[in-house]
Length: 287
View 1 (cartoon, rainbow, N blue to C red):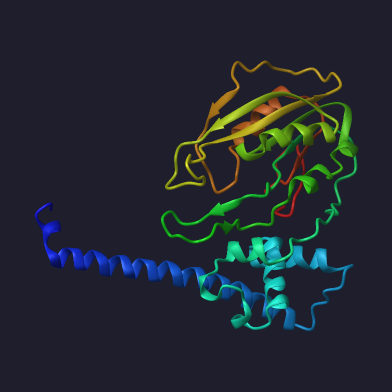
View 2 (view 1 turned 180 degrees about the vertical axis):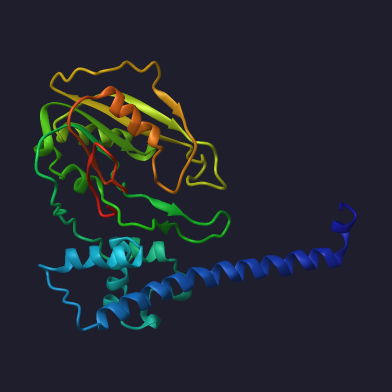
C-alpha cells in the first residue's frame, strides 16, 4: 500500500474523493436547513391550526408527538420561516448550518409550564423516568448536526415543576432515573419534589454500536434513590451498581422494578411509564 500512495494518480484520487466528501457534507447541512424551513412553511400556511398564545403549547406538543420530533425543532422551524420568508434571505446562505442558524439568528422558545394531569392519591413508592432534554447526536463522521430524539423531551424547569410532592405519602421512597449530564440537577429536582437523595444506583450497559455520546460513549445510567419521612425498607441490597442487558432505546431493565418491589413497601406509582405492570399505578403518554 505504501508504494501505491507514492503515485501521482493515487494523490489525484485522494483529492477527488475528499472533494466528494466535502461537497456531500456541505449539501447535507444545507438540506437540513432547507428541510426544517419547509416544515415551518407548511405548518404556518395550514390555516386550520390556530397558533394563538393560549393554544400554542398544546399544539406544539401534539405535533411533536405525531411527528416524532421535539417541540423545540417545530418552534425553530416556524421561526425560521417567519423571519426569513424566502430561503434566499437566510444569513450566510448555503454556508450556514441549522445549529448556527438557531443559535445566532432565531429567538429561543419561551419556557412553558407543562400542564400535567397526574393520578389522584398518595403513594409510598414513586418510580420516575423523565424524558431528559438531550440530543441523539449526529451519525459518527457525518459532519451533520445532532438529531432530536424520537419523543418529546422536558427541560429541567419543566421536570422540576411536575407536582410529584402532591402524590407522595408522608413516608415514601422515590426512584428517579437520570442520565450522566443531569446528575447534579436530579438532586435538586428530588428535593423540589419533597424527597432527600440517599444513594445513586448505577446501571452499567453493554456497548451497543456507536452509541450516544461524544468523546466518551455513554454506557451507564443512574437511578437516584431518595427518602421522604421514615419508610422502612423491606430488604437490604449489597451493591449500588447493576449490570443488565439493554432493551429498546430508553427502556429500563425490568430487574430494577422487581428490585423496587422487594425493597420498598406500600402503594406504588410509575411516572412516564411505557406499559402497565401488575401492582403498579402508571402514568405516561405511552400507556
